[in-house]
Amino acid sequence: MDFRLTPEQEAFRDTVRTLCDREISREYVRECDREHRPPTEAFQAIAKQGWLGINIPEEYGGSGAGATEVAILLEEVGKSYLDLAFWLFRLVTYGGFAVGRDGTPEQRRRFLSNVATGEWSICFALTEPDSGSDAASISTSAVRDGDDYVLNGQKVFTSGFKVSDYVLVATRTSRADDRHHGITNLLVDTKSPGLRSAPLETLGHWSLGTTMLHFDDVRVPAENVLGKPDEGWSGLNAYLNYERLSLSAARTGAAQAAMQDALEYAKTRQQFGRPIGKFQAVSHKLADMAVMVDLSKLLVMQYTWRFEQGLATPKDAAVLKLYSCEAYKQVADLGLQVLGGYGYTMEYDLQRHFRESRLGTIGAGTSEIQRNIIAKSLGL
Image 1: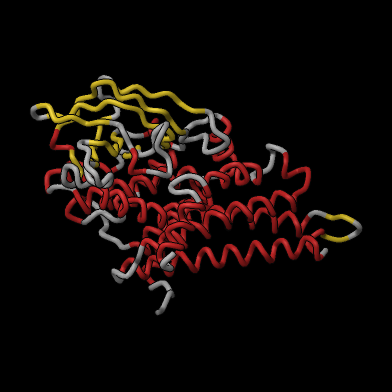
Image 2 (image 1 turned 180 degrees about the vertical axis):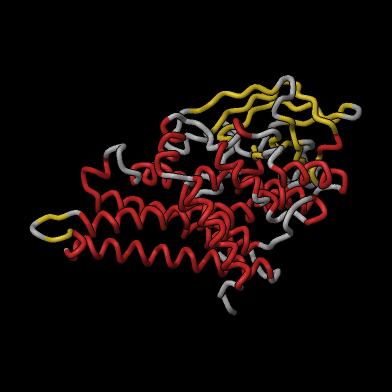
């Protein structure tokens, strides 16, 4: 098992890093965050490089790259701005991966080509007011009516909706004793009549935001069913596992940025006649942060290798998601402590890491759910 990057992958990482340094300044990130504004300019710069189609086959305008390249891209962008990386991870997960995995030839041609150029963005709607961790209990209904499905219901915590052209909606199309049967995934135009959205005020991720959706007799062409009707549960799980790779890579990059900010502060901030980093109480915090960042990077590399070898399991995805998200939260907390009072001000970026890291142990499957998956793999 060799985790070393190939020369081509090293060159790709350096190219992404150079673009991020040029296009995503600290002040730009702070401005987007402060104004709750999507980082559209940086997104367009990435689109011009063709990286939005990184895991889309070449025949649809993409690069046809593997999970390692996806992780490299998201980690490097995550270092500069996590919300921008999250915009990208939804494209590679619900565009390149989901449509690439389950789409019809016509869906692949239509959706993947537009995602690869940046013309279309896609987000995901699963959680409902009464259905969170128990995903199989969704009640948003889709009833076949001629050539359409008619949607009714609500979704909540749909992140990135305000920058999306389509939302992949998990719906209930039939009921059976097996709750996992009767789920259908539909690609819904965000401008559909009857689809209303309401922004939610949250602790972080202000640039992309999160939204409550209301579906009132929304008509969706039957040709927009992703996968087979009533058999969408297996697809959902595959998408979520790929999402756990994507968001873990992005958060690992953000954790590196948080650690670097704390390290630079510890080297320059003077107290009692020397840099505070010379005090063991501070240096040990930074040592712990370095360990967590390194382990997160290692888990990302291990998962991408296993995924590309066809060996990845739900337990592998759960371990990766659990550790990387909890590590980022702890790194951000320790980093803020290193900065002391300054870390508590909006002037420094640790406060943003502190706010945004908190979502990691909740969204895309709580830490408790990840531990359930791991425990199940142990026969418990």
